[in-house]
Length: 258
Image 1: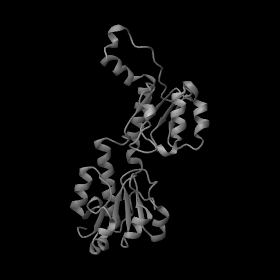
Image 2: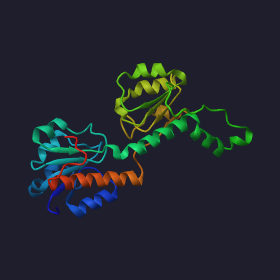
Image 3: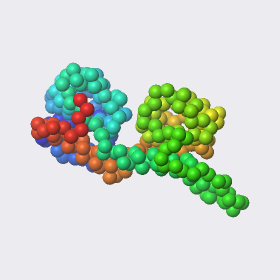
């Protein structure tokens, strides 16, 4: 498979990049800021694209690679993949499925604990020396069965209604996609006290985070690390490699999307 061209369009963990380079003829998009700069022999050699949720594979990229057969996504997010164009051209698409579910669920529980037990705030309380002047305030009991006052978000359509339903004693957790949330309404609800708190691993315009959230003690902010463990990212990388090898060996794909 060393002669099969693979275009890597986004920076990934070193293990995946090294394995792609070892098993295929790897082209890195950042070496060619404009795809038009790719020599025609390279364009003709590229039969696979490896991307993630931030870069995807749009119609322009797909059209620029006439020999493209498969797009393998190193994430669960597929918003930036032009799936219709892939179907039109018979290009297969693979993505991450259950391989990252456990880690994301762990993080959701961590955000619940951090929010309701005010773990981050307690840490700052100790570091600042305030403990010497008295005990920290009482916090809220955590219920891991997700009663109505805690919302674990994967997909939302009627966001304002949900926030109103949660109210000042409710907690909002987003481990899914930032763009599934009305971020302006979320910020407004937190600043105005219409929502009790929020634990956020994803945002609408990453890595930009609304600055209004920085000064709120009832908010825990994470840099999109839901699947961010060495073990899970390695398993994700192996899944990308496995899907590519299955395709080029004429075997069933491991996690097909298109």
